[in-house]
Length: 159
Image (cartoon, rainbow, N blue to C red; front, side, top):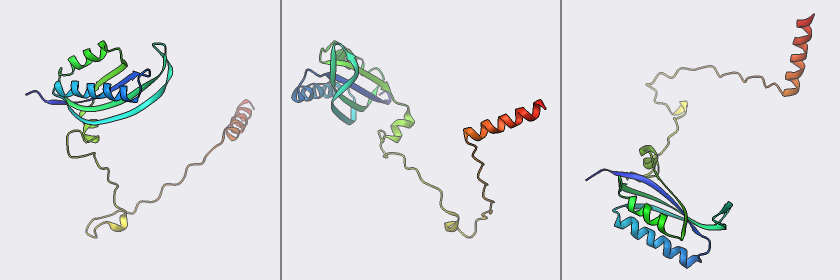
């Protein structure tokens, strides 16, 4: 068995559909993904959105994003069926990097948790904690002050 790879599939269905028609297309796509052996981990249906620009003489479409795990090459037939369908205006299938898939919790184990370092007061007593001097704040120069300094430098250089 080939290793399962993480993918993200984004689809845009035509805005000519109603909500029930979009749900029917989304269910059809989920069936296609399951038939291809994909394990759908998350489905995010955005609903009807206005396009930034006209696509195929349409101004609106239904968006959905699928996160899934599948073997390499298993989704070729799904992509072909999406391209042949008139209800799908656009689609994008990308393979996610493994670190991104782990962050999203697609490999099990949940999203990666970020931890902040403990404050010095909570540090165990047996550790050597060096007291470092605080850095001094840099002087902020506004553009007007910078122009005045440049003019002063130019005047003293020409003298």
